[in-house]
Image (cartoon, rainbow over all chains, first blue to last red; front, side, top):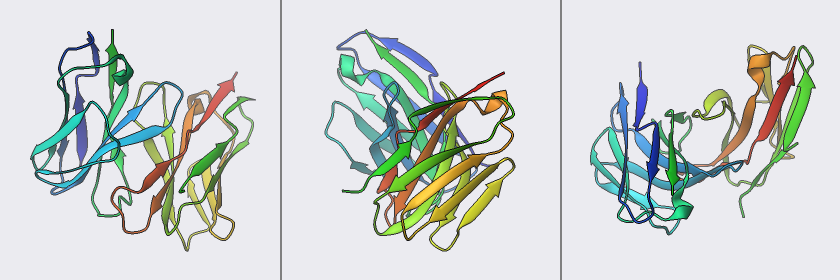
Length: 113
Length: 113
């Protein structure tokens, strides 16, 4: 069966510090991978998606970047965090190009202080 | 502009009662509509997924309906339980697009004993 992992589960970082969140998927090959951010009481905002190794598409301009060094690994990074980067970050995967059925990871709660 | 609107924003009902959540969308071309349940601090979990040709889909006490002509969907919860307290998110995907996945802002449901 397929599983998706995210770590860390929670993170408190000062403004200006770097960020690296990791997401890995097991039990499937060549998945579409997604990074979302959810602000408190708000809907999910798509940040990045990837249809293959090294292929990253950004949906919104921001202080963050994403990379996919391996087929089932997706990393969200920042060189210098802003207060506005605080939120709940979710990674998701799907098996088809249309994102027909997405499966979400447990999320990372990021607080920038 | 593709949008997904959910109502009500929040809802409180007594344990054992039924409730219905609404989702209206303007996404076109339409691929599928999904309902997710998101417990606080957790990733969303899929409840139902419906394509254009499906009018209703059930998952235990959850029943989703879809009217593709009016672009409306509902999620009906029967005999609510305390564990149903969560946010319920309506998600609509655009046809043949890995990234055009529009999330509603969710309905926050609270079940009171």
